[in-house]
Image (cartoon, rainbow, N blue to C red):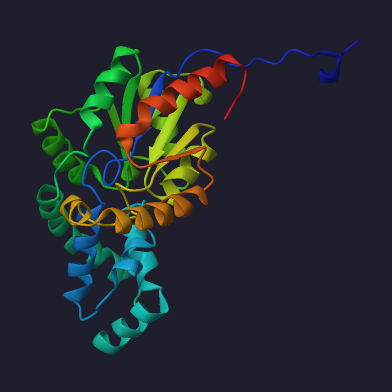
Length: 281
């Protein structure tokens, strides 16, 4: 007799500690305000007679960069400007040509905006003292990531592994980058991993991978200000922006929302307690 699954009550639940933290780069661990991609996108479109707004450039943030360009080109206002400047609707060949032009602009702005998020190095020390592995993933391609890696290493940080959007069949919000980081790290359980990101699509990636997710609000895309711009604000203005950014990231479905990765160790402690109690993402 073949027994059906309903005859058994066994369910395996991971109750160990967090094994891996997988972080986005721009706006999460480096480049406060995620300025480097925005500066490059605005300059790219301006060269072609299209005056894109920062809000338009930020809307597809977190996606692979050719996808980002494609999504910007189909925005009605940008499409109309492109047609007025070029005499024709944008087509796929334009996406590819723009992507090639984008690369040197992005490489330059990555270095220009190359500063680690305040408190990240302290967080790294605390996490590694717990035996937690640190992975990275990004919408940058491998050449862009090479620049990010070099800048971060100069500042004292190097991820254990990294996966770029161009190294998997589909980038965010698909879970494949996060899963590829797990594979490189040798981690079996998705519920032992935390995905940290400053974009909604990055949080969706982590949720689709079955991981705990942490949205960073102040240091990333939801704020958009550089560290110097942020520091220049008065306390009242900061709090207003902070609350708005937290609300935006909360709508992504993230399990936790924090100001920046400086606040991550307390979240890890909380997730460890929830895992020990049998809770899952």
